[in-house]
Image (tube, rainbow, N blue to C red; front, top):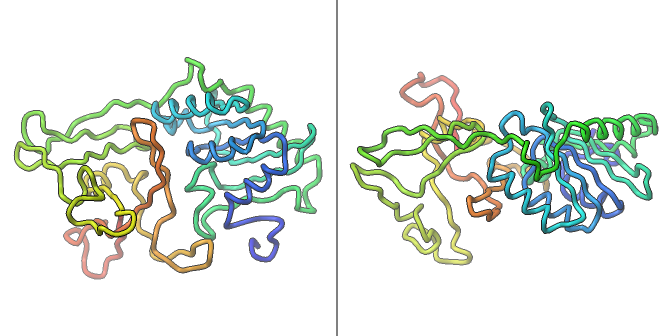
Length: 301
């Protein structure tokens, strides 16, 4: 359907699809279960009036770090307003575009307002262009606009002190002796990734995945000297939501068949935002010791 009726729904190039609609509007309202701050900033800097509603805070998707980043983002984009749905969880992905007070277009589908949602490979996410669908009349567009108004009534401004964020509390698991332990996050959406390994009683920084990554041993000294950090089996087993299985086969937006993952947004504890990607080959689940030779298994990266 996405290929044949391109004006009705889109399966790829979703980020540009949203940007194009935003550029031809004067007001935008976005309801999304989750977001990445870099995507919100990209839309906000178009200079349009923007209202964004974060829907999944009650399910633990809003961390203190992300809340702080969104609060900072609202301060630097003064004509924008960011809200958090507080009374219930909202899984909706809805993009409403207005011009001169009227509805210009509405996109609905599965794509969150994030890099991973809007720049996923082909057939991964979907947005339907309601205004281009002859089966949808103005009545349905108005109903969606009314829905947005109802969500507004159940939302708090991003700087409201009543907003509840997911806990940052952690438990510890021994990976040595004394104080040398890994911290394991209790939040299923958050993984704490140390840049050291514990050998005996000492914290050891690996050559390839430690500090000053690009100039360390094990890296190619050409071009941008890519940097990475290691994702251990323990992290993968404790955070299955954070670390995905390696795809068997998928299509990129250009149609290329690949096993690479879609890009993700990483928010560092100092507020720095980076675009990154999972790569390489990791642990197998079930492991070789827990399966017979003919048992199916999945590999993580």
